[in-house]
Length: 93
Image 1 (cartoon, rainbow, N blue to C red):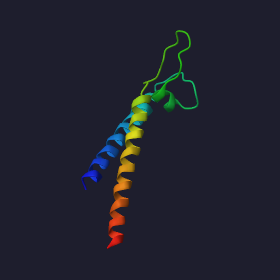
Image 2 (cartoon, rainbow, N blue to C red; image 1 turned 30 degrees about the vertical axis):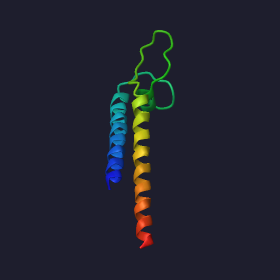
Image 3 (cartoon, rainbow, N blue to C red; image 1 turned 90 degrees about the vertical axis):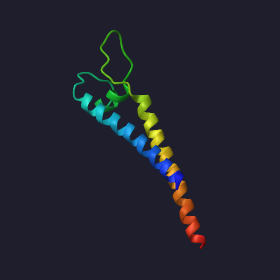
Image 4 (cartoon, rainbow, N blue to C red; image 1 turned 90 degrees about the horizontal axis):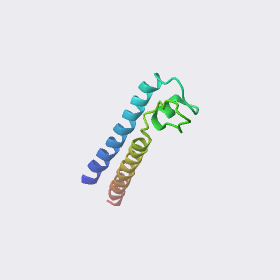
């Protein structure tokens, strides 16, 4: 039971990090005037290389975004393993 709670908090923490960065990137993307790549949102979160002395319009939140995704997946794996163990125990009885 303790591992299920820990996995749930890890997953919720990762999801809150990821969703907060997506929300802040989508709010900031409406104010970007120039970007490189296909998506303004992707550019607002991860950024791109700077050419010359142009203004960089990015939040550069790529590392925390990837960390949030990893935490979400780690929590989901912990929850999946614990639920699998729970169902396996109930099948033995």
